[in-house]
Length: 253
Image (cartoon, rainbow, N blue to C red; front, side, top):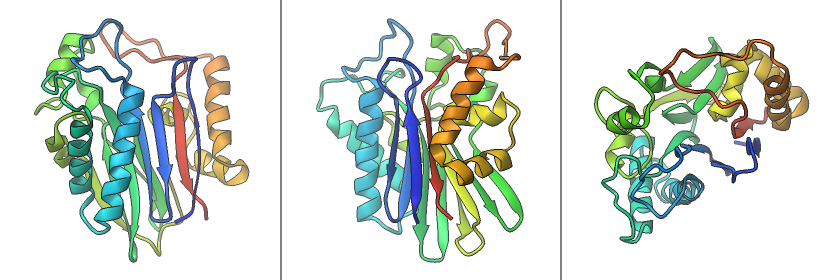
């Protein structure tokens, strides 16, 4: 597979998104931004988490070229645990974490995996399919106590952090390579084009085909600055950053 990609931070903070592409796979990760003064029990930050996880995923995908992707992710999370080198409290529910999207070509098919709110979107013979793990949309509240209590817990939501068991909760699937017309992986900094700014995924695919993935990032920034109906959420619901890190990897057709 031949991918093109673009990534850009949403502020002057380090980019907490990460993207890796190769001849056989693409990985898009989004580090979960930590609230100020949050006790994570860890000396590392989300930018470190996504780069460590990306490195471990590349190793696992390269070593186990046909293993199920949830097993690959579990191996990678275990690898990240070892990189903490005993300096961090890996039992802390607020340990650095990341969302995950993976696509891998395997023979005549393409495997995909999604964990938390990064996305895999593809267009096949039957139309556009959006692979989205939306369990974060239904939390009873989004304060630090509730989120910490429900992170990587049954009835809550799942992210790539310190528990390899979270990988078993990922959404996985397969699509035939022959019928695959278009495919992209993105963080929620890109998917807001559809979620908030009223584009369709066909619009996003067409924009990327015409102008490349950088155009999708530029479109997000333009909408963020000028969109007249920026969402106003009721008290207690998840806050939406006006500018978020934005990353997209798109299959060249």
